[in-house]
Image 1 (cartoon, each protein chain N blue to C red):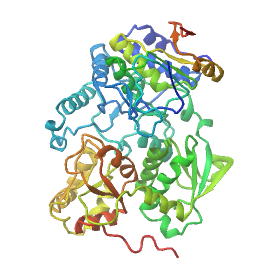
Image 2: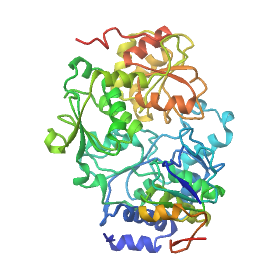
Image 3: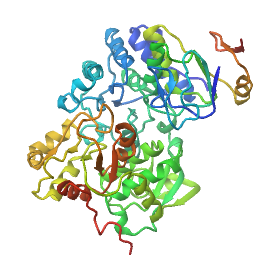
Image 4: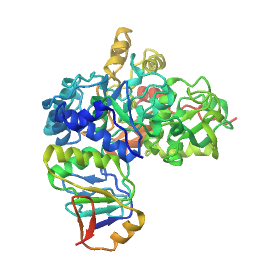
Length: 120
Length: 421
């Protein structure tokens, strides 16, 4: 589980080739998002984000799942396209602020097929 | 709110018309649920941004659509690509072989899908596009802001893949900027106290747009104090600059843009921010990373130069040539380049040492080799992105300053531009 407290743009601030946060202005620059469950209240909007997340899912550098408070169309679209094209999933789940806080205290999380999140 | 789907939408979703149409409808429905839209509404036009190569998945996506029977439901025009199909020497393949060849392939695949190959970020400069009140689907940020604000067509900002999905299904979620209540201003910028001569200058809309973007944030701004005679290119500048610096998707120019006959029509009250001369000076400084002095290049045409801007630059050049060896690039669309070629202006510009590339923008990588070092521009959007994307230093100026500087090979400042009464 990795929690980001500053919104990340998947386009420009994240490198799908490596899975690393590359934005010099992001406090968690250098963090590796590959195969973690990513907790992030909201993503920073970019019209190119769907391609970046789809590319990361294709390459295996994407998070295993993403937990958001504010639902995000770009991430959802990118993940749906990648599932269709490559048969690989990256579930994107929206939770309440209280739930987000509670999950943020965990070390390992499991996302079930129906979107339920439980400590693992 | 539950989403109501028409029978045809449900047919697509069920896969009766193939996997491509099913995926497209699934993406539109997914967006509709996130936006809490009650239904989908038909669109009349789309502008496709997914033709801009960012990785292998972009190519795989359009291939999947073509292989599985996708058809466009509405006219779809293309944004610029990473490479120029018309001027391939701009970004030579040797520079980034895989990227350049894949980017070209991607553009060809979208043409194969039936898109009109306009390859422009300023589709609103071409004849036959959407009109006031039309619902459309657009992704390119400046075009979203321009269509919404200046044309009065209605679009949310549709990211990659969703733009194509809307064009294929012919539908968008009825939400956000498609609704009447979603188009009201939430913050008011008042520039009326600034001297009229300033507000009539060509740098004013550039600086204003750059300045208001981050203050507006996610709010829709209304602007008082734009001269009624502000040319379309000025409205383009506000749209592009505010979208780049702040993500603005719709703005209203009181007495200027079609939905804002007066302030009360678009703004029910709330925060008013005065636009001061100091704020614009700060915007100017913010868009300039280098001191005045010798230049390595001049880059104009972000968003793409219009017919009228070409008329203006031919007038300003007045038969003179730019400094020998100084790269001066003006990006535009094929459509506009044809028009200026027919007028004889293209020959005049090329004879004067100016290049007019089409199909592309010049601020992203792979870097056009000539654009290095200290580059001057009149475009706030170019100045905003180029230092980070290309590693160049940038000097912002008016169109006249750019022309006179290009002729001299070093920055020339207009003594009349910043005089306060």
